[in-house]
Amino acid sequence: VRLVESGGGLVQPGGSLTLSCAASGFVLKYYIMTWVRQAPGKGLEWVCTFYSAGGRECSDSVKGRFTISRNDANNTLYLTMIDLKPEDTAMYHCATGSGLGTNRGQGTQVTVSS
Picture 1 (cartoon, rainbow, N blue to C red):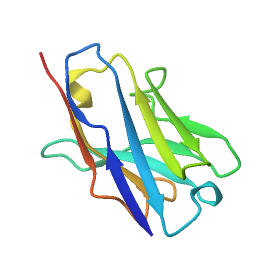
Picture 2: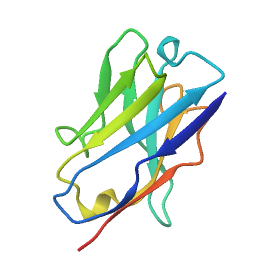
Picture 3: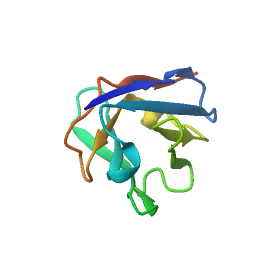
């Protein structure tokens, strides 16, 4: 199982980013997949989950702003983020499983600052 995240960066408040998570070694569509994040000095926080059957949910803190999606053709998970806030600043990881996940990638840094 290998997960490689990309797409992070520095963005101003109100801006948008789309994170990617390229999966290899397994077929992503057969697994529950999750995005989690870790802000500086804080623990892991659940962000969104995509269920293998197609359902999806996100935490209240990002609901309406973040969307989790999946492209089965290229075995990639995405997190589209709009209206970003400074409190969204964190290292973002994709992971297999629900909750805080099981196997996590190395992550991609998102910094929201003016």
